[in-house]
Amino acid sequence: QVQLVESGGGLVQPGGSLRLSCVASGSIYSIYGMGWYRQAPGKQRDLVATITSGGSTNYADSVKGRFTISRDNAKNTVYLQMNSLKPEDTAVYYCNADIDSRRYSSRPPMRDDYWGQGTQVTVSS
Image 1 (cartoon, rainbow, N blue to C red):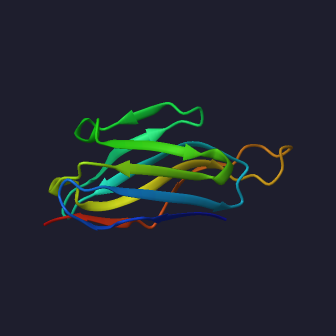
Image 2: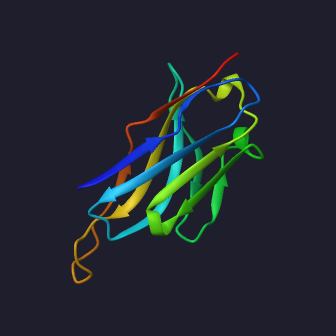
């Protein structure tokens, strides 16, 4: 089994910063793309940022220049540094990863999409 566990959410004032972390654990052979999504109350879940295994990144227009996604492949971890936070950034933030969970290299790939449980980010004065 594979698990994604997020941490780092909380309450922050407008203009402040937070750093989210997401660690993947369990039966992991390889991790491909990783990303962060968010869902505000009454709204759909939207992409925030993604990063490939090679380090290429993609951001939603609303967070470009303020958020930075990064990953540590040795630690199976993805980060989201959030600066200049705004009230409209308030949401539950979810980690996502495309993971091959086969046990042995001789086995065929077992790729699937995994999600964390979410961490609340609230931006308010």
